[in-house]
Length: 155
Image (cartoon, rainbow, N blue to C red):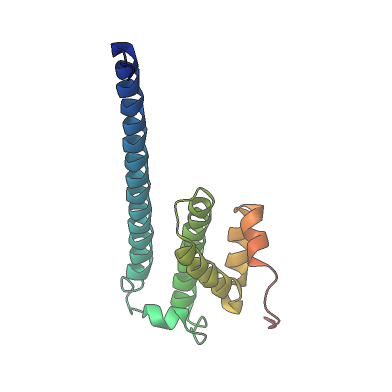
C-alpha cells in the first residue's frame, strides 16, 4: 500500500473547506432572498393598508368594498376624488410590484394576483382618466402586459 503524504491531506482538507464554505454561502444567499421576499410583501401590504385606510378618513367614510365594486358612485365629488386618488396610489404600488417581479422579488402566484387586480382597475370606466395618466409614467413593459381594454365602452 502506498502512503499518502502530508501535502495531499492538506490539499484535500483545503478543498473540502472551500466546498463547505460555498455551500454555506449558498444557504445564506437563499435565506437572504427569502427574507427580502418577505420584506417586500410586508411593504406591499403596508402600502395597500394605507390606501384602504384613507377611505375611512373622510367626513363620510366609504367602504373599500364599495370602491372595488362595479357600482362605485363617482357622481359624488368626494367619492370621485377619493376613488381617483386611490386608483393613482394603486398604480404607484403596481408599478413598484412590476419592478419587484422583474427583479425576482415576488412569487409567481402573488404576481398573477397583482396582474389580475391591475387589469381590473385598468378596465374600470370611472377611472380611465387616472389610469391613462398614471400609465404614462409607468414602464412600457407594464402597459403592454395590461393589453387592450376589455370590450366595454366607457362613453
